[in-house]
Image (cartoon, each protein chain N blue to C red):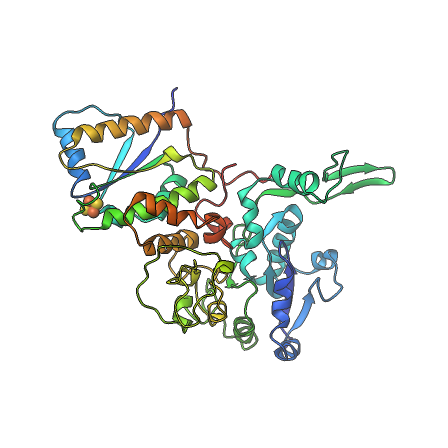
Length: 139
Length: 318
Ligand code: FES
């Protein structure tokens, strides 16, 4: 059986979630590997959410927010950007592949772009295989 | 009434916790007057077999320092758990893995190779590595097994209380011991520090706006003695660390490294600290953010200095 990754998507309410909605209403095809959680703004996303998701079953985590300059709360997505840059540097050290954690921007009008991102991320994580959850063997 | 029986033990630790205990000074006399110390490898000659011979639950309190990273340490932790009514994780290593917990950035094989083959001062042409069992002419010799992954005490046995610190400050240790002697222990599960808030709360430095364009390592700058260290670009963990130490490090011009563990309600101290650091970066430009972050050379060692085994990820994937 081929590996079907589980990807957690955390999408901001104003742009990205509407973008995902548009992808749905315009019947764009994209892999069913994504599970979406809506938050008010990408600035709400704590790195703990991402680490916890990986540790509890996700093989990848995707954060989507409004394009830079477009955040409904002016600067939440910049905050997300700073946190994600930091987290990615830590993740590299911890042996978590770069493609498992992704921050990107999707506007309300970008249903196509949303579908593309999901396709791309699913493909990449399929290559990587499941996220190794065990804390190492002690035997 | 018989005096309460107390046991003390060290597992994967540096010995600093035992010295930390001596830091209580003349209160040590009060302690010895009030309790019977039945086991303390660093100070009194009681063997493992003597502990094995004790009845289950016959020790009132065990103060256990050090992380668990070998079969011997795991065995003694379980043994002392069975013999003790109350188990206290004493110090950062027992609590969150501590400095030895950073071994979780590697695995057993890598550690063995580094220690016995690669280090510049090692000469080992036959590539001899420690074995858990060796058949000598006189009989079998054994050594404990080194674990792949360092564990905290609470990941090994049930723990009732925590006294944090690297090592615990004298006032913290004494606060706990006094409660113990007078029979006024707090609710089970308490991290005993006397302060539920962050180190910042005890720090006298002036705080203003936290906007940082560059992070420094401690040797790179001579920080202003009055102003918040984080505002000066030193990654200070005070914001993500439970108080009770009286902010000794920031008061002396050194950023907090987080040895008292997370503030109440936080599940991952390192991620909390990382979040705080990311939030003070004064830039919206991806390239510039990348540059500023590059100044933090060792994020895992900075954010998880004492807490890697207790973190969500527990270890690096190697
Ligand atoms: S509201 Fe969309 S990123 Fe802030």
